[in-house]
Amino acid sequence: MTSTGDAPVAPADQHDGHEEQIERLRFLHEVAQLATTARTWEELLEIVVDGTRDALHADVSSLYLLDRDGERLTLAATTGLDRYQIGRARVPFGQGITGLVAARRKPMVIPDVRAEPRFLWVRGLDQRRFVASMLSVPLSWHDQVVGVLNVQTERPRDFTPDDVQQLGAIADILAGIVEKGRLQREAEAQLEQLRAIDEARSELIALVTHELRTPLAVVRAYADLLAEEPDLDGRPSRDLERRALRAEWHRATIEQIERLDRLVDSILASVRQTEDQPVEVVPTDVVALLAETVEELTPLLRQHRVELLPTVRRQVLADPPRLRQIVEHLVENAVKYAPPDTTITIDTSLVEGMVRIGVADEGPGIPPEWRERIFEPYARRDTHTARGSGIGLFAARRLAESMRGHLWCEPAEPAGARFVVALAAAVAV
Image (cartoon, rainbow, N blue to C red; front, side, top):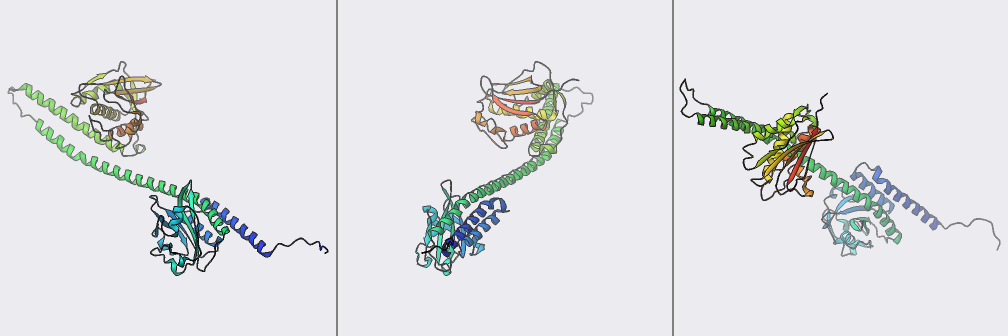
């Protein structure tokens, strides 16, 4: 036999096989890039099922995702089936071919769907009428099944091991893309829900506190009427002491009404954006402000002792009404949680250019894991001595931040809690 010198020619079926493998690899590369090219979640899934159907030369491709409760798989995308059923058609976990593949975590090939008793008819997707053969593979991510990818044909077909391997490779790539996309969508949806809840709650609180102003004004008017004394017309009063006592009661009542007014302002400030409320801070005498605030809170402090420890008069850059509200919130918090007949200590100090005002009590103290949570809106740490509303400390921190200050909680010595608000010191120039 003589050699012609020609190179050996590959058989036609081998050449076709190479072309098919190249086409499959090309599609797998496209699937890997879908996460960055698809504009929406729906478009991503649609491209995947369309490409899967074409790559496997099938008539139908569908993607089912396992619900978070693990009980059902829901149709997430399809090409070849009724798209109206996306998000509606569900298969119980462990039932039907799709459910069995998810439960067993292994691919299944069904050469004849009509003769397969395990095939599950899904309302709205009467596949028996036109589907002949089926190949299903699971989508797994970090050892957890997240869904099932199916391809189906209208004519009988024997899916080969290469078909199973290719669809499995697509599923492996798709599992990570799908799960990360779901997690992102769920996080965005949860964030949106929380934002909506927070906005609704803020609107409700703003409405309620706004409506409080009218009854407060009425109470003040009645208090003024009750305080009116008839003219003596030159006659001496037979009860000067009682007149003076009533006048003192009136003064204290008006002070508490004004305090409620400031509390309403504080609550409204806590549910608004602080950047919408510019603050003009001025040098403020801390010692005088603390003394005045404690004096106004005398009725509230009747069961506690208050010890003021400002040894040096200090000037702080603050909005006096807001600083007064902060101190009121901190003192009220101490009164609620400290047992009667204990001491509430208020002190000031100068640390690195910041004036620190501390309010300490002799209550049960606050565990480390709660020292930040108590400043969250409506976070309440109820004890056997008191129940909080969950707004006071949140409002106090917002007020401090509006003046470029800081508010935190630390343990008191020897026991109890100490709240510290730090504001910039006013420097004389």
